[in-house]
Amino acid sequence: MRYYYTACCALAAFFLAAGSGRGEGVLSMEDVVARALEKTELILAGKEQVEASKHYQKQAPAFMNPSVELEAGSKHIRGASWTAYGISLAQPFGFPGKRALREALAAQDTELAKLALREARLFVYYETMRLAAAYAIAGQRAEHAGERVARFSLLKKFLSGRPFASPQKRAEKHIVENRIDMFSRELLRIKAEREILWSRLNTFLNMDGKVDISFNVPAAPPALNRETLEKTAEERNTSLAAIAAGVRKKKLERDLAGKEAYPDFGLTAFYSGETAGERERIIGGGVTFSLPVFNRNSGTVKGLGNEIESEKLRLAFEKRALRERVGAAHREFVIAAEAAAKLPDEHLARMHAQQKEADDAFGKGLLDFVTYLELESDIYDKHQAVFDSRLEYVEKLTQLLWLTGELKNPFKSGAGR
Image 1: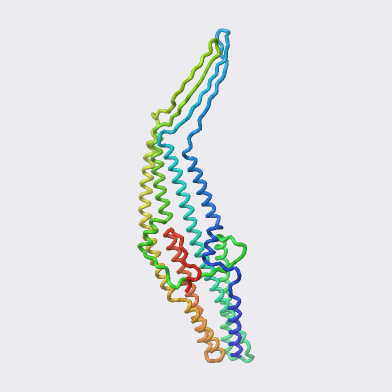
Image 2 (image 1 turned 90 degrees about the vertical axis):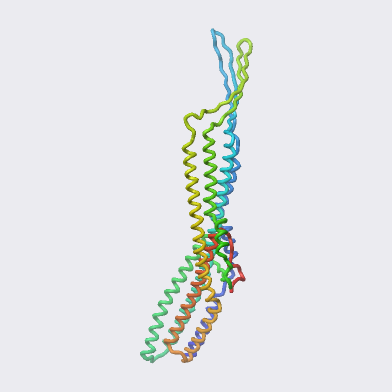
């Protein structure tokens, strides 16, 4: 019977390995992030907003339209009547400097739209990368948990094949039955979590069916210098760039508000005439403008000045906070990378060999039941430690790279260890 159990374990391992092979629909990490950047509506919406801002920018320096006034009527004096008519043309102009400031303000809006698009790209890029890695690791968890359920199901059949079992063997059978219940429940939980991960990932991919994802943790972590990361983040981080662009926009708004104290003006030209007796014609021109007597717009100028100082202070704080976040994220990544390096793929191969050796020894009666269960549990826990370390590695690395404001893929195909 024990040789029967060993043969069953070998067959189960073979079929599980065959069934876990990837199907035709396999995407690399490069494929995943490329599709997300192409298909996600969040990025497409950002592109449309940038195009809209460009159109507004072109429109901002346009001159105001001229106006034309036509007049015609009849004039009566002492029983005599004749026709009177007139035409006037007016062209309004902004005070010198306002047009250029409005154009500069529109350019700042375009810059802010581009920064929003860049932030959307960063979000989609690294969130997709993180979810793709988590989904791939969840598949490995499900595969290993399935192997465990299959192994204990065979063990149950092996222990149930004894017609006259001793109390010790019956107790062993009960232990196996109880563990099958727990392991089956855990397998369902892992599969459900994987389904949820796919749903979240497919929000970015927008695919009709599921695919497998080819994911490898690099043999060596990327060389990331903390000082270089902090400098890059200060230059490229979209949150900081948006605050700085906001300060520049507020300065332009203040300058324009100052110009508003000086009135716009208009040039007019007119022509009028009458047909009474000798024809009378009047031709002339003029200038119209409002007097800056009651409103100098000083409150708006001062208020914008306060807002500028407020944003400058916030920018200084965010720069310091970003350095701290980058430093903390770098330390967390270093720890995660060291933990992942201690649990390479060789550990998985070694544990598979240990499990096979234990299955063979137990089937031949060379390993007692308690020791077999302890070893199997230790191997399973170590598998989970490997999966956890890889997931933490991915999360810490993507978080760190996200803060720098650059798009980098450290999980390219063929970089696995």
